[in-house]
Amino acid sequence: MTAVDVKFPSTPTALVRGVLGRCPRCGQGRLLHHYLKLVDRCSVCGESYGHFRTDDAAPWLTILVVGHMTVPMVLISEIHFQLPMRLALAIYVPLIVGLAAIMLPRCKGVLAALMWAMKAEGSEKI
Ligand SMILES: [Zn+2]
Image (cartoon, rainbow, N blue to C red; front, side):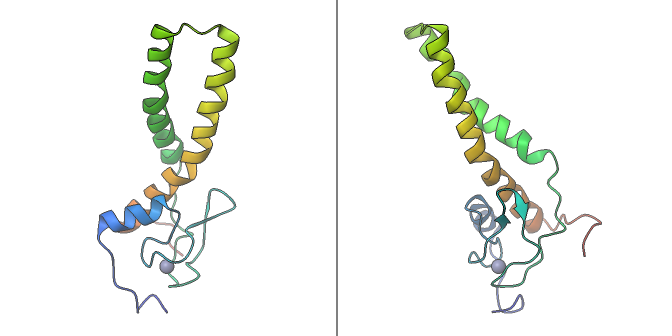
């Protein structure tokens, strides 16, 4: 399968593939390797991704998503349970750090897929 053989998917399909860490174009090859590094080319369809730069958008989106997931939970639990500070820190810090670690590559994948779908490749294309 080459880049010519694969049809372009819809933008929502490309975004879902990006969240899953798959090539937005074919959905088969990997989009990321070594946790956050975009692959230079899809191993299945050959689409080029190495020139995309998501810069600070992925951490920003991760903070936005994780913050919206955890802050209401922390506020509600503080209102209803009033946990001791050490117990609260023992629960919230690993939870928030873990969620951020899980969400960061997904956010980077969706942003790279969005850039690919919008053809916002920048001037660094190889
Ligand atoms: Zn591909």
